[in-house]
Image (cartoon, rainbow, N blue to C red):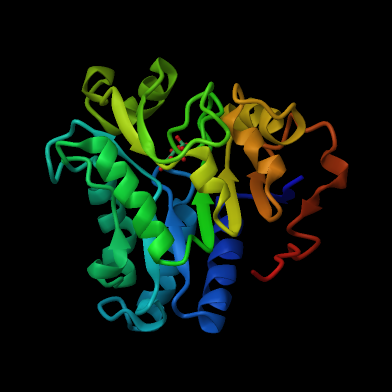
Length: 266
Ligand code: F6R
């Protein structure tokens, strides 16, 4: 069972996770961090970036100089450099503001002609870095984790997937209209994600309540990709009260404003 942490708002979640990451980086400067795209991890990235600015280090890597990072997934079919490619978004939101060294930040090669080979190479790159230490995650309204849509094998590895209509509609907010949202993506598999030592999933808003209750209190099934978290020895789910609103056992869970999360060290 993941550790569930209920927060008052996104800012509290951002602060909690960013503080934890900074602590871990002091202990392990060469930490390997898995980066998710989308709105959910933004409070974490914004908090980390704000502290860099406060420390007057926005253009130098400082504590991030040895951090290795791996993107969780990427659209397939967007022109290189497209503003909504996850590589462009993560470069704007994470790589530049934190001053990460570009050679330490890894993205899957979605322009490769042999894309399945590119997926296998990405798995090898993760392995060569010693595996992901901390993987940040969001969850789709349909329960997807990474871009592993419902029906994905719980043991799956990095590969090309077709995006569900629900996901394309949800992500249309980042494009002019839904027809511009790619139909394909390359995503780390649920088995790949599960190999990370610590999973931290963030979810906010009532539109995530069904996905959260299914993932953490429902049966473990490929129909609910997020349920793979229940198998993981060290998973933390950080939700605001709206995303937590359908949890039956919420009285058992930590309220971040009363207790500090029990982050185990990795
Ligand atoms: C993004 C990703 C997706 C998102 C999910 C939630 O890299 O893999 O699983 O985390 O679609 O998106 P947001 O956070 O925008 O609600």
